[in-house]
Amino acid sequence: MIQARTLTDWHPASWQTRQAAQQPTYPDPEKLARAVSELSALPPIVTSWEIEALKDKLAAAQRGEAFLLQGGDCAENLADCTSDNIVQKLKILLQMSLVMLVGLKQPIIRVGRMAGQYAKPRSADLETRDGKSLPSYRGDLINRIPFTEADRAPDPELMLRAYERAALTLNFVRSLIDGGFADLHHPENWDLDFVRETEAAQEYHALVASLSSSLGVFEAIAGEPMHRTHRVEFYSSHEGLHLPYEQAQTRYLPRRQRWYNLTTHYPWIGMRTADLAGAHVEYFRGIANPMAIKIGTGVSDSHLQGLIEVLNPDNEPGRLTFITRFGAKNVEEHLPRVIRAVRATGSRVLWVCDPMHGNTESTAEGIKTRRFDNILAELRAAVRIHREAGSVLGGVHLELTGENVTECIGGARGLKESDLARAYKSTVDPRLNYEQAMEIALWFAKKGGARQPS
Ligand code: PEP
Ligand code: CO
Picture 1: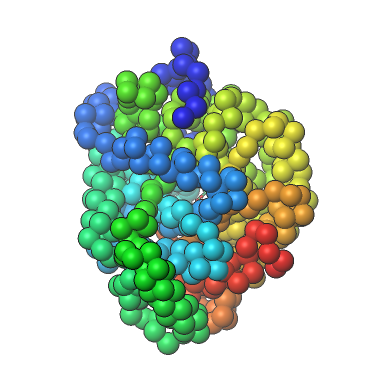
Picture 2: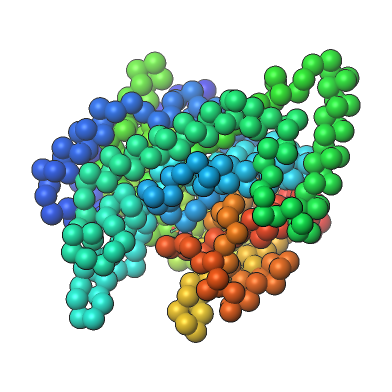
């Protein structure tokens, strides 16, 4: 393990000396301090062993020897912490990872946008309706959706409620996995009732049948069941946006001589909070977790190089991921440029494509949506551009749900604008539904191998 240099000028609250973008203003600072202190006293959700194991896997993905599948809701809601929701999300991610494992012939690193994805950046601090202005809804970690003064006032108690929900979520995911739900011998556990007849489901079942027979052959040769050595693993991630929450569970582990954020395995910095001189970069530089940064068209080469210098000065393998989200229209212009800029530093990053956030648009009626064609076009371009540059696309970052929603346009079912009203549930960004998400996985399996022609 690389021993990172000891930081003498950092502590979990040193971000408070910097400009912190996208933070709410709490009406009662004492109540905030009490909630942070209560949160700090609770047990952690994840451990440094898991975090370090994930970092090793991400290092393999950087070398082109594994592939990251990161997905989940744009934002979790406290009310959606139900067994059905968690099982469905796990099912879709496991199914996709199985398809990608078979197609790419590589280990798939499964990471949910879950168990802590409760805070959202907003374009304005205030929302105005009929002449009345209230704080914008910033996610269930901060305030509530209804447009009333009481609901929109930032409430520090919500951090505790969200932390408890995050712990319940991950606890259930771990129990399902440990209990055999994710056993490769029983992929029938992951079937979703409403999709038995679709084309993607048929392709998926054919693939599972061929996997089962290969597993049988492999185990006959090896003389032991494969799951003993190849247990499915699942990690959590969220945007590390709300710094009091992240700070509260940041601990120094003397055995490792490093600080860890123990709310999640793999936090990321959103595009709006990646300012080099800002509070988020200050906080992230001191923690040992692997971390990702969202990269949009506005990022300059020197900004990227500065992020590498500050966040990964020792070029630690697996530590830094750049998630590019340029949009299908801009990926050709920007991706080759950022690959060159990073290469010039001699430092290694994991390149991941988020084909969702650069492709968001609004319909004439003001509904936020994304077109499946644009999502796939950005992915296809990213695979090709990395290959042409001698670089590796090591993962994909998606907003998806196992539910049968109608939030994104297109896909094999040809969802149209007029379908959006039917089952639009997201309170923030539009997600791929089960079939659309499986289509992306099947495309990856067939065409998206980083080194195969697409
Ligand atoms: C998100 O991932 O939901 C998000 C807000 O992304 P970005 O920071 O890339 O806009
Ligand atoms: Co989003």
